[in-house]
Amino acid sequence: MTLTRACLADNIRSAINSSLYVYPIEENMQIADNIYSTHIQEDPNTFGAMHPGGTQIYFVGDTNDSMVMIDSGEPYRAWTRQILDYYAELGRPRMSAILVTHGHEDHIGGLDRIQEELGCVVRCHPKLSSYLTERLGAGCVEPIKSREVILTGGGLGLRALFTPGHEVNHISYFMREQRTLFSGDTILGNSSSSVRNLKEYMASLELLARQRPALICPGHGQLIRDGVKRIQWYIDHRNSREEQVIKALAGGAGSVDEVVRSVYPRNLRKNLRGAAARNVTTHLAKLLEEGRVSQDAATYSVNEA
Image (cartoon, rainbow, N blue to C red):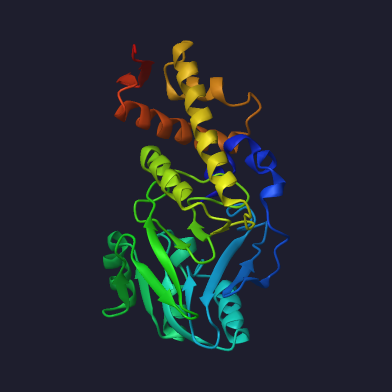
């Protein structure tokens, strides 16, 4: 997830209702029974703008039995040190697996050293397993099956939900016992998410909505206490943007740049215009696939109903 993709949509951090947040984030904290996190607050002069609200690494399970860790963060030494220091603070419990949400470097960058330190297998989407096996070595990686329940200490289970859209190899993990969703980058705490395939992404949001999570633990940003409401907000936001794109096309906009000028504020910062164009292109790709618009070279038009 990058700054321009994540922060783009209408200064979205201010648009999101603050009542959806749980509480101020501490660096190391117990979120709920059997759920712990270490929060990496990035330097705003370097990485902070890339990950609004910082990055969350989760430990789930019983500290006296076994646990799993979700994602490993960037490969920077300071990040890895913070994660391993928190693992030591938890008492160095037996780790049964590191669960990966998706293959972006800010989620798998620290795997090399952390997997070696924890001595456990890395579980990931089948489309990511070959790459991680090549990187970590034979026997270090096991692919996850769709809807597989991964057991951890305390008799808890995390169901793997394949949620493509942000990335093709994305998995979210749902703890039914506590109605808690670990959403990776499908849902974020302080911003909207970048999307590679909007049609798949919308289907993933609908899948997550059916789980009716009470708490969402995102890969970046603050925790979300009304998960159902937040997911619906994401769905409504994307649908609203789609309507704006269609309206712009019907009003005479034909190119991506023309749609951007019609949909986004005139004072949109220059460094965000490229992300705006990518966002519009993602919407147009979905509309093309659905047969709702047509494309002639670089010009788009709305199809008659």
